[in-house]
Image 1: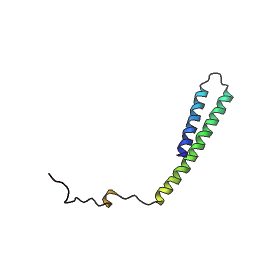
Image 2: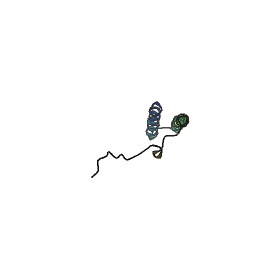
Image 3: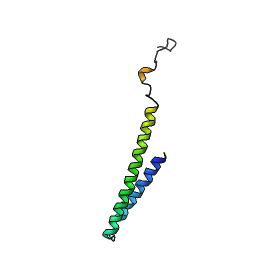
Image 4: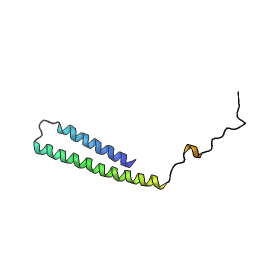
Length: 83
């Protein structure tokens, strides 16, 4: 949950950068700095998300396979009401 919140915050920051880049009064140097900042935020969150995915995969495989439907017994009972 914390990772999803952090990703949401990073996406909000990148969105704000995109909106600020639409300002016609920006000089090229400032625009370049905003692009670098946005790339840094996105790259950092991408790396963090990849690490989290690897941990989740590792945890999932450590628990073993989930039971399949065919593994559970599904038997009709004679005591059921019949028409």
